[in-house]
Structures are given as structure tokens and as C-alpha cells.
Amino acid sequence: MNAQTSVIDRGYANMPIPFGWFAVARSGELGAGDVRTLRYFGTEFVVWRGEDGVVNAVDPICPHLGAHLGVNSTVVGNDLRCAFHHWSFNGAGGVTDIPYTKLIPPKLRRNCLPVWPVTETDGVIFVWYHPNRVAPLWDVARLPECPPGENGPGEWVLAETHEWVINIHCQEITENGQDHAHFGAVHGVPKAPAGEFTVEGWVRHNRVVAEMNTPRGPMTGIIDVQATGPGQSIAQYIDVTHVVQSQQVTPIDSEHTHLRWQMYHIPGLTDGRLRVTSARMRDLVKQVNEDIPIWNAKVYKKQPLLVEGDGPMMAYREQYKRFYKFDEVAPEPVAA
Image (cartoon, rainbow, N blue to C red; front, side, top):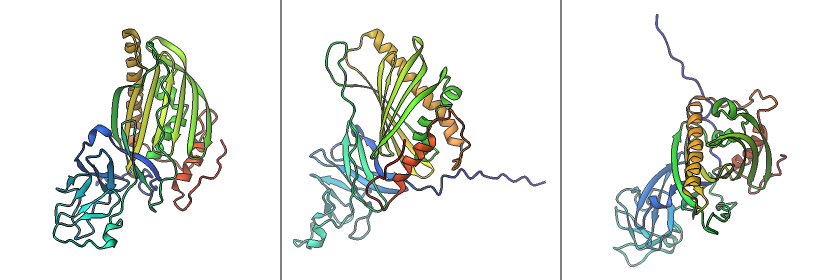
């Protein structure tokens, strides 16, 4: 008897990639003069940092004779120099130098190489993706203002960074936060959380009050999340301590997502408070590691069977649909 193994269609391969700002690297991963080819959104592009510190991103193929600009290219000043014939391009995609000619045609000086909008915020490099090359429709969010520490005012302290590559569409990762019932089943949260869900423009806001297991035992905590676009969210966990988790989800393609976290605490913590805060961060990392095996194997349910207590997943999906409306430039109002 011949046994055949059928592969489950998980439903992600044909899902579109949403438009928006997405993290492609942490700032420290791209130094002045560095050139890198990055592969996200089912395609690739080339980034470099000039001597002025500014990060630029362009399509990978030189318009001259087709060399790949991520292969052996160098940074000269603030420009990217192709290895094949030493044509140089600025961050706007224009040719700035051709070493064997004195005359650069005006059409080459004017953006002959397609560019990707780039911004750098709170130690993360973001690229704007839109399949129709529509210009950015909103700004990347910044970290919230840091409350005074135990020794007075200060700046958030970056304590930990984490990243994972997960076999799932990016929409599912942020939908997980709306799935209130899984907190008990997967993470052992003592009581199903109660939450608020609101939408304003391109921003989704969640506020969840939940019974949490903390290093000091069960207590009521607050999770306050602001998600700006599909690729960025900033969560504040306020319970036995105060942790800020800056999260970026970046689609590699429709079936794979790069998840990044930067975790912050207030300055001037005593040794005791720092131990408690570190334990809280470890618990958050433990929770995502509990989610990942499920994410790696689950299928997308377009019409899930939901009951009371599951959380606002359909409201989330209704808001998320706007990031697939590639011909629109402004969000339609979405009921909470």
C-alpha cells in the first residue's frame, strides 16, 4: 500500500501583503558606509548609510546595465557606487557621477532609480512599502514620554532586544492580541481579560485589564497598546513594574514574518526593582515563545467560529482591511 502525505493549505500564500511602514533593521546593524541587500515584502531592495548618517533605500538593479547594487557596491560620501561601471546614485535615485563621461543626461540626474521612503526612529530603521508606490500616508510612532524614574526625570532604558522569524502572515501576529481567550489557555493568565478597542485614522488602540501572574504573585495589570499601521505597535505593561515593548512585524512574504521587540524600563531602578522588571520581561518573552509553535502550524480561518469572550478579533480584521485597499489614500471610519 502506498501512503501519500497531504500538505495542509494554511491559507496564507494568496493573502496580500499590507502597505505601511515596516522595520527592516535596528540602527546599529547598519553603520556609515555599509551596504546591505534586504529581502522583505516578497521582493528585495538595497540600503546604505552615507557619511552623513542618513539611511537610503533603492531598487536593487542598476538601470545602466543591470548589475545588482547589493553586490560589491560601495558608499562614496553619501552616494552608492555601483561595482560594475562605478555609476554613483544619491538617495533620491539620481545619478551623481559617471567616471568616464563629463555629461550626465538630465533624465539620469532625475530619479532614474526607484527609491523606497526611509525613516529612522528610536533605534529602528523603517521602510515604507506600498505595491503602487504611493507615498507614506502616516508617520512612524515614537516611544511615549518616559515618566520620572526613582531618581527623577530621564529617558527610557533599552534593556533587551529580541527577534524571531515566524512561518505565518503578519496579520495573524497582531490579531493574537485581540484573542482574549488564549491568554488563559496558552499563557496561564488567571482570568480572561476585559478590554477596550478603538480606532482613529490609521491607529488602533487597545487597553486591556487582566489578572496577571507576576514575580510577586497574581495581580491586576494594565496593557495599553497603540498600533500605528500594520507594522508597528508600542505596548505599555503597567503592573508590578512599568515595561514598554516596542514591536515591529515585517512581512518577509505572505507566509513568513520577521518579528522584532525592543524592551524598555524607566531609569534609576533599584537592584530589587530591576530584578522584578527583568523577570517581567522574561515572562513576556516566554509568552511569545509559547505562541510561536501555534503560529507556525495554524491555518487562517476567514470565518472563524467565535463565541462571547473570544475578544474583538472581527473588529480588528475590519480595521486591518484598510491596509489592503491599495487604491485608497485615506481610511474609512471603522466602528469599534
